[in-house]
Length: 145
Image (cartoon, rainbow, N blue to C red; front, top):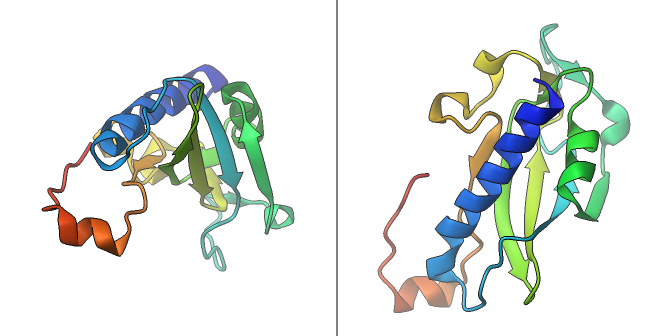
């Protein structure tokens, strides 16, 4: 996957994440984004030869990254993580912060990307973390994006 395609997926997934999170958040969620990126969040022992893994990424977290920094960090020789969970975690008046939990297996083959069939490339759009009080006060309706 080239950097331009990945950037498009990242921005689109960010917008969809905000749309999913809005009913559950009190804050306004601006469309200016920063990202907290957590690498190697998967169990990659025995990953097949069709994947590239980067053990040196274990435990690495990059906070408050821009779109361009995320692209530079996650597109490696045309390969990207097979899945990236994207979650709204907070907002200020200026920016919405999203968490990116990334698989450790990288691929350039769309058929190995978990969410490619949904049109999201490697991005899995997840609900924000909800408190247990929220579920008691509201009827939860599941929406898939």
